[in-house]
Image 1 (tube, rainbow over the protein chains, first blue to last red):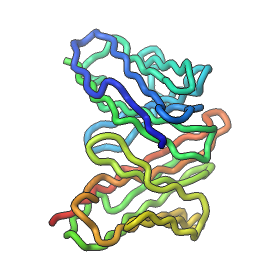
Image 2 (tube, chains in turn green, blue):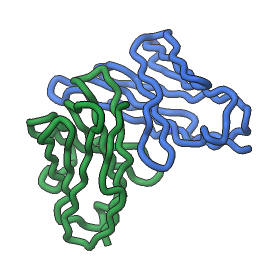
Image 3 (cartoon, chains in turn cyan, blue):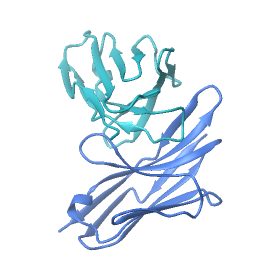
Length: 116
Length: 114
């Protein structure tokens, strides 16, 4: 149980392109989904928290117009990196959790984004 | 500033050895502490600890939390090469405006040699 699917797993595209990443909870309803970014040899840094049907809460320093998050249903959240530039290249990971807290977050397999 | 510190950052052992990974934390509104294993891709959940002194066990892995000392350990006995991974410690805290969120440590890179 508690499977989270993230797609695509790898994206390579030109600078200026917008990229959409999907995160789905396959066997549970995710009240809350989280988006993280991970640089090589570093730990996960939380970018934003999204609750189904409401606006995402962004961490300090994360541009909400750059990283658009939509959580339209209890099983799907999307992250769109708008007008991506080389400095946006990173490993993006989503997680999903059932309930408001007291349950572990379960992670997708991540998306490696490379902007040329 | 809230922080989670793991040690050691890197560890190389031989198959069959027992290892202990450490995690200390300072957070404002502690809710739980979680351990994850990260291999090539995303972290997989190992344990969630909320109460002091109660050991959680899964096969050769076990973990315990000390809320007085703000510390947790993850033990792996009879290590195997498949245990090689980065082990992440994360602390869940609760904020009135931000809700529940995880703060991760840097991770311990464990390498188990045959």
